[in-house]
Image 1 (cartoon, helix red, strand yellow):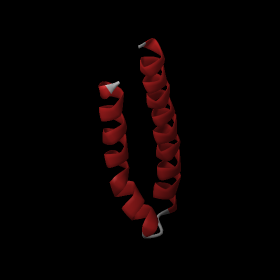
Image 2 (tube, rainbow, N blue to C red):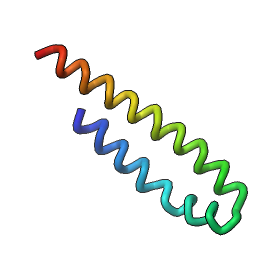
Image 3 (spheres, one colour):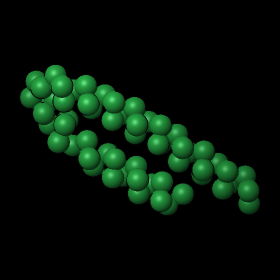
Image 4 (cartoon, rainbow, N blue to C red):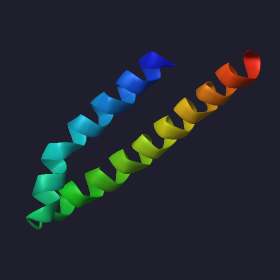
Length: 58
């Protein structure tokens, strides 16, 4: 569970540069950000499932 959380933090941090570029009007960076945000969503969902499994397993 902690490993997944660390991966999620790293993924969010890795998007920062492209977000700044997208805010400046770079369309390609905007496309990369949208894909990376989908990855963030999926990883957050995975973490959520692991937390529920941990809770229900106790």
